[in-house]
Image 1 (cartoon, rainbow, N blue to C red):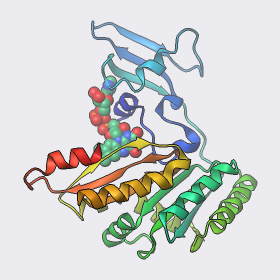
Image 2 (image 1 turned 45 degrees about the horizontal axis):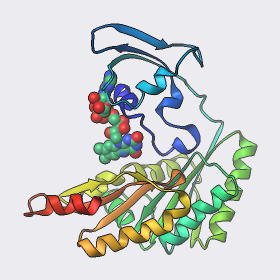
Image 3 (image 1 turned 120 degrees about the horizontal axis):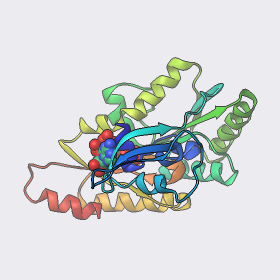
Length: 260
Ligand SMILES: Cc1cc2nc3c(=O)[nH]c(=O)nc-3n(C[C@H](O)[C@H](O)[C@H](O)COP(=O)(O)OP(=O)(O)OC[C@H]3O[C@@H](n4cnc5c(N)ncnc54)[C@H](O)[C@@H]3O)c2cc1C
């Protein structure tokens, strides 16, 4: 629910350019623990006084129950382009992400998936990801046409410079939707490979992505748990999915240890 999004200050693939829930919350009506009903903010973009909306958003229901939310709407962009870059290693894929940011290109989204995730997605609902790739990066640029053309060219060039095996621009809305359907169905697809999975959610500086991914692989080898990676690479927000089986004796403690 939108109340849940406010509770968690949720973000997603497009957070890189558009921010998280707090950046889109103009006002809240809240029922406080004592039963008082208060309104914070409203239609105005900014309200005088303390930023109590900033305090409430992300407070996980601990400060009150949100019963009304005023949200900031942003116009739908004139042009959107989605690019799939395929890499022979997650290190190269990470370099592409770092390269874009270093050149001050801020796409709307930069999502990365590893080979395990790609295979899971393609076996569930083929989305056009090459199963032999070690890593893919899904990039979306949006805005006015001229800006998008220039950004799309720059993004593709960075991917080629960082040893992409192929760089594909979605030709039409159907292809674009298929690429996103793969990403959005990734967690469900992993669910088909394993009885249970434990999602770890952490953020690292983008420059530390290659080292962190290498360490995750090491942890996977040491622990014996397969770990899939699908994450918001643009803001360094990793989601290692540790695959396990709750019916296996002692597995729960081991998987929690592995995640820690
Ligand atoms: C597999 C998986 C992937 C996820 N991926 C992401 C992700 O990529 N990015 C991200 O930001 N989050 C993610 N989440 C976390 C979370 O599920 C989301 O942020 C989601 O938007 C929460 O919404 P919900 O309706 O499920 O909330 P709930 O789980 O129902 O509630 C979340 C919290 O908000 C409180 N709450 C709910 N409604 C209200 C209300 N009206 N007033 C006050 N408090 C309220 C609850 O008490 C609770 O503490 C993920 C979770 C899972 C399980």
